[in-house]
Image (cartoon, rainbow, N blue to C red; front, side, top):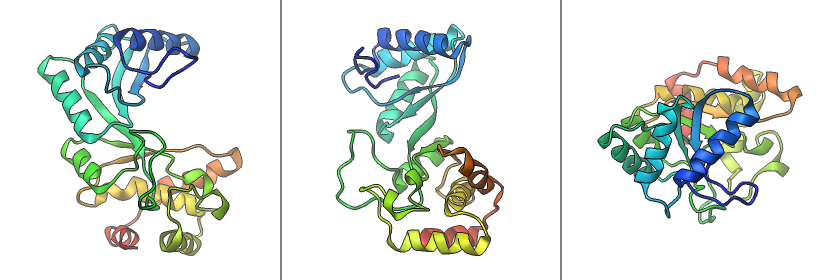
Length: 226
């Protein structure tokens, strides 16, 4: 909830949150949602209103846990401070764009809050003991095809390195990216990361091999140093 859907308007006002959770429950055919996201921040609605509305959904049993997507770190911290001071349910997961390739310097994000994860955000999540759900982590297939590389991502040495390493390990590059993500917690100042990706059915099994790959701290440091 948060982006404009069906012309109903964007935002995290109480009435919007309550309307869209009921729509989601109806469409999913279920009584509750395990993890309900504020899909993007709403600077025009007081955080108190947003967090109290989310908390009411938890208390009613419609939602189990809350997540924040496309939030600045300081805004998430402020939202959770407000929630905790009032005995409301805080956000317990952050969903943000994150992948192995570096962001292209000076490239303006498409949306105001749609910025790629940086080191400060990773340290923030470690400090708050909060997992990162990494969306767009496979760059729309760019690890296998240069033609799919997004304009705001750099290829270069990192892309060449991970392709070569994947070839040596006998896996596809996307699988190695997933392995990198799920092993990052072994490094200081890195939280646990949950990769969120889509792919065709023929690539799914290959990509999921990455979950089973154990990378050492030395391998992770080498990958990050490129």
